[in-house]
Image (cartoon, rainbow, N blue to C red; front, top):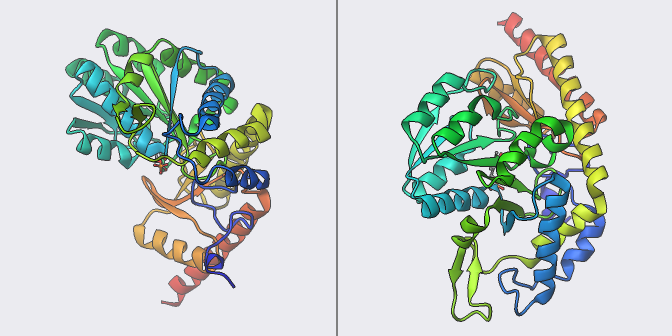
Amino acid sequence: MSIADLDPRHQTGEIIGSMTTSVHPRVFDVIAKFIEKNQNDHVLFPSLSAIEEELISETKRMLGLSEDIRGVITSGGTESNILALYAFKKTFSSRTVISLESAHQSISKAAALLELNIVKVKVNDDGYYNPDELQGMLARYPNSVLVLTMGTTEIGRVDPIIPIIDSIRKYHIHVHIDGAMGGFTYPFTNPKEFSKYVELVNEGLASFSTDYHKFPGAPIPSSVLFISRILEDKLKWDSHYMPAGYQKGLLGTRPGYSAAGALATLLLKGRDGLAYSAIRSYNLALETMNTLKSKWNLSIPRPDVPLLCMGLGEKELVYRAWSFLWSYGIRTYFCSKPPGLRIVFMPHIKKKHIDRFIDKLLEFFEQGSREYHER
Ligand code: PLP
């Protein structure tokens, strides 16, 4: 037995709550060639410069982003979010971030690190903001940064853009679209709606980030931030001892294998493979939602990305269900609005894993009700 055997595995369907997934076996061979190399030193490692360029253009091609948009390789959703808010602050002297309460905690982290004022807008039980309230906020804080999420962490909502597009223009709002989870699913499940976000990015009014290490299944850590050229300049720091004279992003030394692994993943799966996977997983999520609702009448917000928050009502019950499922190797996560269990339909999750999850949940409810009646 090795120490790694302590961990559950993706392939067995045990990992059902996390946004991680299995890596394509051929990607392991590719990354082995780049493990010692620094992505932030293009001069010493010219292969990484070519890989980065190809990764950015391949991603832009897949997602329909304009060739003029710049891409910055980062270590994950958190780094992408911090860099986006930093670039807006530096370029436009924006002092306020308007975010929805459903945004990922890295937005609050970024605001704290960058000493930005953060205003949080409430969302209803289905994860939607009130358009009048948000428009009011945009009017009150012109030149601020608005963060919208493409696939919220807890319920999988894609924050709508249409109701506020006029206010965004009118009040000179800079938008950051956090597509950590949905950036590689929503374009394929909802191409028409996705094109509205792309228009804003291509016009230079919004930045957009998405993680290779989430749905596409690239090795961790791996994400990208798409941003206009003037904003990208703010993310380069002089570094006189380096042959290139500068470094990009928050990290000094950056893993070269990440970009190589991300590119290998995209090329091996291809646009069609990723689209197939996104549609299959999303359909499985909706089917599961319908089954759970019809069996137990649970409260489950209909997601826009392959993720479900299965509301169980009381926190105590949530925790008991979580412990029960974990004891059978079914590793769900939590969600808070509604209080419940989060399951994420990453590419490794198959129907048989969901069937097992539902069987165990049934057992839990039966046992729970027996305990209740025996009291
Ligand atoms: N943004 C969203 C919407 C997320 O769901 C997450 C993580 O789950 C992040 C950002 C942070 O990503 P990372 O953990 O790669 O820093």
